[in-house]
Each structure stands twice: as structure tokens, then as C-alpha cells.
Length: 133
Image (cartoon, rainbow, N blue to C red; front, side):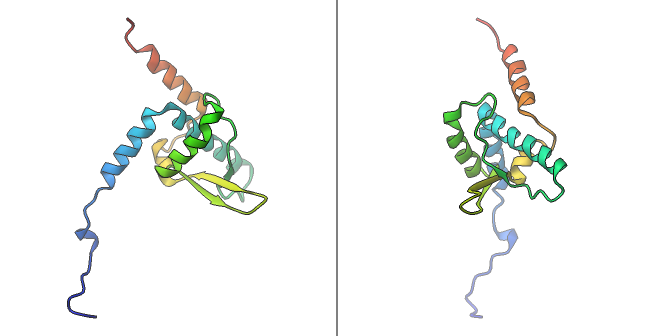
């Protein structure tokens, strides 16, 4: 190995992950529809994992989510993937695209069971707390 080779240790690399995680969580918390879609995937994952012991976590794309306008779903999927909350994979011509919550997606939902109804209820409760004019 040449003597002028540069070696980077993990200590040499600045840790910007906490800043990125905060930004991602702020984005998620600011967008109700994004949380509803993420929660819907979690709900479906929990239902299927309880029914099928060999369930690998991959789900077909959700075509509708309560509280989310259908035309928004494609854009929301893209945002959740870009922010690292949702993963996707191509399985083939018959299966098409499959999705699953990433580790970050599970952490963003607080590692607890969250249903779309619970998110909607949380949003409704917070709206009642807004000052009236």
C-alpha cells in the first residue's frame, strides 16, 4: 500500500445522521397523509404477519388509504421512499412492486401499533385544540 494513501476511520466522518433524522421526522409529522399511509402499511403488515408464519414483510401497493385522496398516493409513496420510511422491490412481472416499512419507518411510528384510525383521531384531537377566531 502506498504511504500517501488516505484512510478514513468512522471517527473521521462527521455524524450528521441525527440532523437528517430530525428533518425526516419533521417532514413526516408535518404531513398527515404521509403518516396515514405509513400507518396503513404497518396495520397491513401486522395483520398478515399474524396470519402467515412465513410472511416476509413485503406487501403489495396500497391502492387506497382512509383519509388520503387517491391521486396523492403515488406522490406520497415516492416521498416516503425518498425519506427512507418505506422500501420497495421489484419481484417480477406478476407481482410488480412490493413495499415494506423500513427500520426508520417503524421507528418513526414509535415501534407501537398505529392504525390509520388512531392517526386520524390524533389529528382530529389536535384540530380541536386550535384557537378559534
